[in-house]
Length: 370
Ligand SMILES: *[C@@H]1O[C@H](CO)[C@@H](O)[C@H](O)[C@H]1NC(C)=O
Ligand SMILES: *[C@@H]1O[C@H](CO)[C@@H](O)[C@H](O)[C@H]1NC(C)=O
Ligand SMILES: *[C@@H]1O[C@H](CO)[C@@H](O)[C@H](O)[C@H]1NC(C)=O
Ligand SMILES: *[C@@H]1O[C@H](CO)[C@@H](O)[C@H](O)[C@H]1NC(C)=O
Ligand SMILES: *[C@@H]1O[C@H](CO)[C@@H](O)[C@H](O)[C@H]1NC(C)=O
Ligand SMILES: *[C@@H]1O[C@H](CO)[C@@H](O)[C@H](O)[C@H]1NC(C)=O
Image (tube, rainbow, N blue to C red):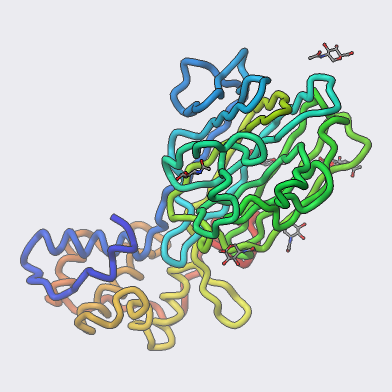
């Protein structure tokens, strides 16, 4: 059950029907309990036996690492996580961090191409035909500049393609692309200097600030680190569910692209309510509305006021009661049903908001799980 289906939910039920009560309980559950589809994994080696990575094109596990493509002409390869990421829904979006270590090996040649990318794309997004060379296995000559693409990538582009007019800088770069093949922001990068060496990248998306940031470093680096960021609302560029993974290609020149480890964590979908200076998680926001006497505003947004006001008020108050700090003080199932059937008087809620403990004090103060 998903929030997007809630607007069609109607409260005009015969509440003696037990099925309707189950619906109400599901409603309370989704209104007051965080919607939970976080993804979290950590892989330090990649084996043939594992089923959590999907290999396409040339990509294959090899001695514990992922070889994205064979080092020869016009190849493509892709390794994606088998489960999709629930990136957003309605106005809720997920934070995530993707850390990985990688090696680009230019094979001692000063002429090499084309690079690899960490990407987010629609689930089951296939390798497009003719996507080798500069297209990194994600685009092709037809789709490169199309704003119809639902693709966001962090590209490690090892080859400048002036002939296509697609690269932002005259030289290899780390960049963030939005929909099209061209980087919106980039940092110049020297894959030849670091050929064969292990780089570590950290890609972080903060859904509250829309900040997609990339940090890349090499262990034996004195030359510096690479750091870029882009304020981007991923809800506008990507579908709600996405596939995440790595893609690479070669063209008339080639190189090896290796992924050595990959850690990923996404948050629950978060929603923040802006209240003057404070962003509020959902249940605090409902508390505020209750204390202000505007409780029905909470329902308005999702149900467009198409409900019985008494029933809705009752539902929200029971919902707030269910957030009581002490489990023993929360209503029993039988009581909930009596309230929802409007058979018992509503519980008396305190006139101040309970002091809910902050669940994730290390998180940025303006976000909180809803
Ligand atoms: C590249 O050169 C280094 C040092 O000269 C050597 O150890 C390595 O095997 C060479 N790699 C390839 C792919 O030829
Ligand atoms: C590019 O890929 C699309 C499908 O994604 C396909 O329809 C189109 O023909 C391809 N273009 C080329 C030049 O291969
Ligand atoms: C995004 O976050 C990074 C890392 O926290 C920070 O360095 C950068 O300044 C932020 N970017 C923007 C555009 O706010
Ligand atoms: C690069 O980042 C690392 C942290 O990962 C830091 O220890 C190092 O000092 C940075 N190097 C430079 C040159 O800024
Ligand atoms: C990303 O692309 C979408 C669709 O073209 C656009 O609406 C949005 O402003 C772009 N965002 C950035 C940060 O470039
Ligand atoms: C990613 O790396 C950073 C810094 O190296 C670390 O703080 C963070 O916990 C890592 N995240 C994951 C999901 O591994």
